[in-house]
Image (cartoon, rainbow, N blue to C red; front, top):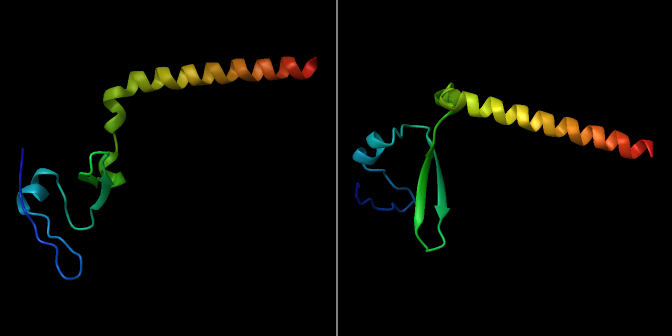
Length: 88
């Protein structure tokens, strides 16, 4: 676990320490999400650009396809029930 310290400037800016930037691949232009947790701590989460997300779903391809097929089947059943109810 890394522990680094940074100082807030007069313009409310913080320089992210080099070790943290390298570990989390934070570069110029990287967006950061700030989340306050229930216990009052603050999390900073780097958001990768869309170009870096290309292909990340390959690992879960089969699960995703099965989920899509299940949703499609469910929607078809619901549509059939809707048609049936409208005919009565």
